[in-house]
Image: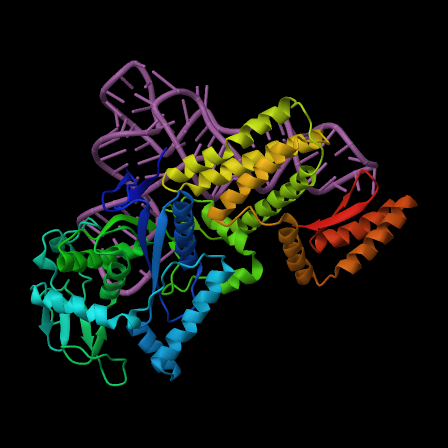
Length: 484
RNA sequence: GGCGCGGUAGCCAAGUGGUAAGGCAAAGGUCUGCAAAACCUUUAUACGUCGGUUCAAUUCCGACCCGCGCCUCCA
């Protein structure tokens, strides 16, 4: 099967056929750097990270561009509130964004252009739009005229007249039409400014993405993505101005991810119901965050609750516990023949990659991949429980395949011990316990057990359990502990 | 008001024109001094409601109800 992508433009899943295979150009709208990013941003970032990685895995040569919007009303407002320069604000939050990206284990895009570094390109496009009659000067501002092209609204399925009957369009007396949007804004005193044929000013919001995408990917390119909320007006306006400028189709496949909800409502800055990425990373391993996000399909709404996060954490702990068991068996001797359960497992393992690919080819169905993996986890535990020797080729094939899946999802493929000890560290830190302390308790408990003082032994165990530490009495008489 | 998306077990969540992946939670069992972990079994007469098409629909079509999103900055 080959890759099919749901295209917002056609509202259908379509076979993905790049313009110039094996090259693929992908542009994703980044963030406006005026504050810390929240989980909603993380979802978009992680989804497109996975899409980028999967396309590469499929053998495409992907040029991935994601911008920083580093000049904007909100940045200026923030700077004024804090009494600092506007670019101090943007610099600060670009750094924060980069830290969050690393925290979430995102791969860096091929290019991460900033609006302010592309003013020349922006001015050039605006000039051309004015020349061609798609844009006009009103006062010291330049506006794009939405009625100059008949297909305005094709991405979001909206019609200009219907939009205007809605009462929420901003009234700006300088505009010819309420839906016209600014390409270039004149600057007020104290605001950032660049020279232009229309006087000092700064770019409007939408034009930067047109300029930066076409600069790096060409006039027509393959994939353009972002959150659902960007489809209108941002992406719609990008299409209008870009196609008016180039006379060619702009992006061919439009991908939009769904929101992260809290109490069935969209997580957003304005509602104040958000969790920043850095807050979440204080309590959760990055892979837990990735698993939480990837366990739902990217277009579905995703509910953030503490319980759902804990579920993801627990699933991942179980996963790595099993992976740890499997690795132990990897080195063991080879058995010539496979028994019933083991043969069944071997069968599943052997087509795991194909199953993974089939799920991903179907519009990046990461939720299905998770199901696949947890199903296999049960199979493994079953075999591991019943046999002390496992055919090592199955172990190696499995670990190898998981490694490949991990390259795409950024989950499931870490060293199990590293992951589990991280989890241990977090629980211990929360409980204020040191490993040595736990060992001491275990010894005390085993002493009590030896003397058949069960009550005393159980009291110690209960104490540790309440601190989040689980004890496990092994068949060989030793006691080990784990968390979560 | 316009446009769009979605309603699957207690919860989260895939999926299919021929009677529903996976996870969590719950119950019973194996194991254990008791536990924990792991494994086994059980847990949706059925996928919002009502119609229609069909030999057959949860899956297609229509209407309706409910939720959400966009139409203003927003991932």
